Image (cartoon, rainbow over all chains, first blue to last red; front, side, top):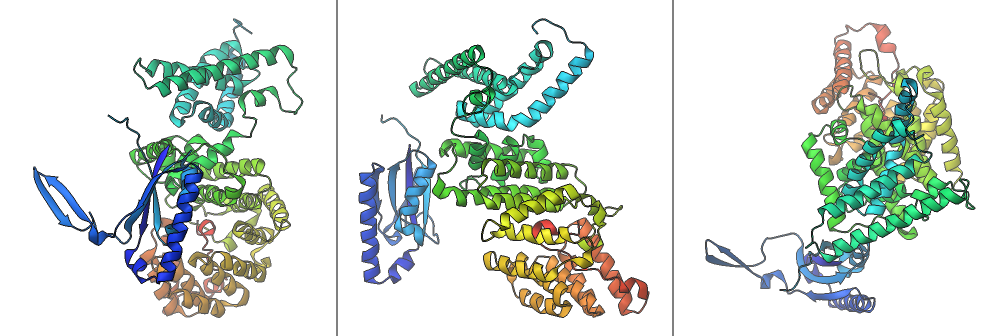
Length: 118
Length: 475
């Protein structure tokens, strides 16, 4: 069964980290991704650009509303995701706990509802 | 016994047997059915149908030698029937495969049962009886799987409690709603959502692996303790359901100790609950007002529960460094051992609270510690600690803090200040028995201030109310 692991963290905090710390964390991410690819769990994943680069689109009464920024201002912001295949929730939780950002941010584990491709 | 009609007396005995079987076995049967059928709802539904079938057939045919196996097998058959009826020709392939797999499983189980009936005398090489082998998984008791699943951290704590009571203890949704003073539809919705989460997120039906067991066990122990506290604290009125809850919590505690004999904290929790529960009959006056620990008639304390609790505490303390439940149980043991309040070893209690604070520095524990210090070293010493606690905003709305302060001031005979503190406590207290007690104290303080209280009453040395969650000896 597939789960989306949504990685939330405080962007402002990331900005305050020293360059050396950031490289170390990025290396950790690389190692993690490689490891779950090898174990057969990895189905996809990406780092997202910061929320100041986001645009929100809504269509109401056929009118298109386009605004600057994420859909809502939150204390922690979505910074990336992994799509994984896991036996059950416990396995997905174990994977989520290994994501570097889990140590200072939050990882949301969301079950995927499978739909057949049209 | 086919076709033999039983007379009236035998029929009644069969009915009583069946009631007992249903009550004792339903948790275990449900746990096994969830594993076999792969669904909480289907397991509940088919178990109900199996019980109905038993009610129809057993009075005539007699209670089977193997009631649990009979009920499980019947429920399994009904489960497959139900799934077949609900499946349609265009059902997803996986659903049809699942039904086929269940039918095969059932056929295998039926065959095994037939062979055992023909060949064995009831016990096999591993010493387990036939009905154990028939219905249990060779890898352990299904109740353990069930309790760990119900108490999974991915479920909201109140959902963990509700699901545990519903499935393991067999309480009805209505009984659970009334126990927690929650409207029935809310409680029903809570259960539906919890089962939905288990299904949708695929929470596995298993005992956690060794490396996770301790941490996951903490959730289970907390749920059991919450259930016990709910029954013990009687936040409103005299709800008979309350006694049920304590009994169920103790029952769950026993099952846990039986199935996880090496888990010391599980034994410690059982000891703690037994020692608290032993005071059940001594805790209230005739008018329903709660009696402080020191006011209780100790000859009303249940000595059998105390003996069992003390034995458990001793075995727990021999098992190495104590955990939080072990410490709380040890404190309860000191109270239980004192035949009169004056014999209580308060210094030991203070020492134990200091160890507990190091592990769980919650404000409640610190307040209990202050109360114990007051008993061991005098009110002034306790007051100093309580003054420190007043700076903690978490305790802002906690009526027991000003109440504790008030009691110490009363013992120091600082009447007007005590009255002020009792007033603050009353403003925060919401439960009836506490309010009655605090009002009475407030009147006493006001009378003292105006010199109208007789010396006899003011000499009564009553001690501080206990303030830990289960130990509030007001009630």
